Image 1 (cartoon, rainbow, N blue to C red):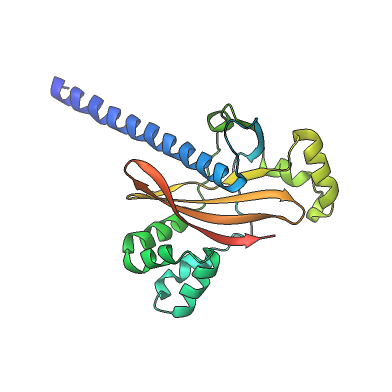
Image 2 (cartoon, one colour):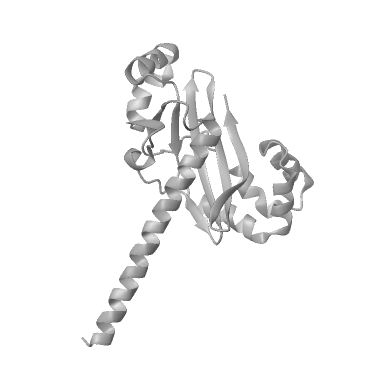
Length: 217
């Protein structure tokens, strides 16, 4: 193997590793952005505590029909529904109408939705954010079979972890300058929600374009 070939292989390996590390940084920047915005955590106001379900396992209530219907985007009722689920984010709806890349970003998110990695709590934590972890099965066991012990389950969670705030993340899908993620929060018997967040990289930083609510209790 010639020296030029070896140099090329090392160069390609360096580019690949650098790409992976950048993607990982983007992942955790986006995780923290979602946490901060959803829970309203404020830096320099004490330590906030959070429970992380370290690997999201999609349940039956994750209904992505709103993305399937992108192909029917000439139907005005689809835009009316999107208007409701984005909390009347008309600017985003206009982007969907005019920018095919936004549509492709959402479509590609659904195609890759089921490859959920574990989220590293150590990389997610900061001086102001204390993160404790739990698996999806451990979380469900607090409530017994068929979730019949809701109130007692939440009492046990609080005694063990000292907080009711629980979050889990899907894989983050990247398409050109866009990133899309689904997250769920659980905070009590009738307290929880699941939403898709779509972001755009602007001048090297991630900016949230919209949040599409899929369910709420």
